[in-house]
Length: 299
Length: 113
Image 1 (spheres, rainbow over the protein chains, first blue to last red):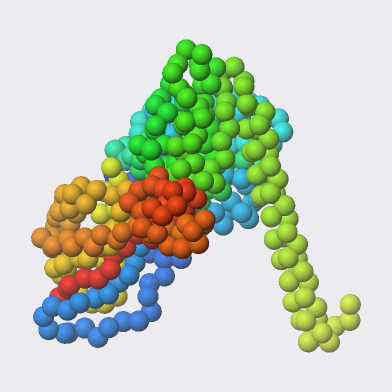
Image 2: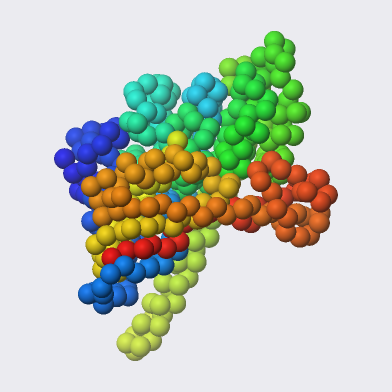
């Protein structure tokens, strides 16, 4: 069955709760009807009927469509003052355990919602829901990353609570998710110390795209030959502005700093929303005053 | 890995442009790909052939224009050439670099009829 909002249908992508529509990532059935909007076509039309071959200049980003969806998601989140984080890592970095511990600690202080991305199964969303937090699973089928279109539909379904935090756990893959903006405030890359310390050099795109590196499983450092300083130095060669926090999700090291980082971001999202609402109120009051005076009404 | 998704993005842009600019066939597609765009040209070509089968661009030629990477070096205060994100400034050895070019993923132009 086709999605009623954007007409997409077919393929293997599935969003939990939208199973009936078997939602795909097929851009060819969009019909320009999509909720995410801003799909307006260029206004100029060339006269048809020219003979033979001709050159057409386009100058268009290949990921422009993803970017439009990402911008729409970002606007949706900003309007609600939701602080969204896109968690990326290779498989096995402990991302889901870290997330479970994080939402357990955070859920009594802030509204929390989670979007889980995996190729198959709803296991991760079930792990999150066991904590009492709302979670929605996206299965990408053969897809190696989440894109902004999938996340837009997940937001419709999940409806994260205003002024809360949204975690998007991307597909375990240190390559492709780097290229796809989902509308998040920050990409957070999780690297565990059981991986190579040279991973930032091997997969530079992700470390360049991220704003925060969580170095996880540091409780295991005594048993490993992992040089934390070297790893951080490699990561900062790629991204000099990268923030780094060392954590152990299982033992709790560094979790307070990580939670404080999240709460700081959530506070910024909240106050930005409040500023926007106040600005809108002022504009509306001015418009109302102008209309009243035009109608000769007294206050 | 995501070259398939990129090719679908290209095809969609072609189909949109075909309606706007009134063409029925695409013969050549020029793409600008930055060296930092994490795209393998060979994988892109392979996927492009697969994705365009049975479309207005079936059998079309893909021309990939490689864009080299440039970064702004903060200590030097000028633009320098790099090849990878973790490269140091070739002049001063600093890693305080801000990439300004080389992440492009753009459709430049088409030959159509």
